[in-house]
Image (tube, rainbow, N blue to C red):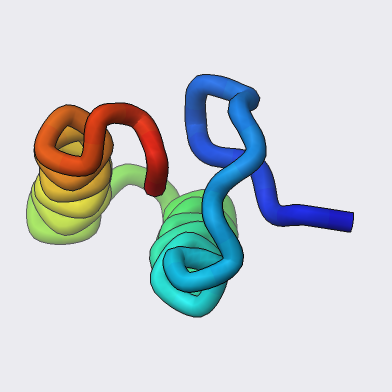
Length: 64
């Protein structure tokens, strides 16, 4: 099965490792947020990760 981009479109195989890493990092940060509760620096890290993913998605035309 091909990894999905955040918009639900299949990503290209060449982008699969990047998508998997970003997705994994996001899941880890979300799990940490649940475990330790809200923390300003953790929230900032999650927002920056989501912003970076959005920028990459736009720059790759949704092919990430």
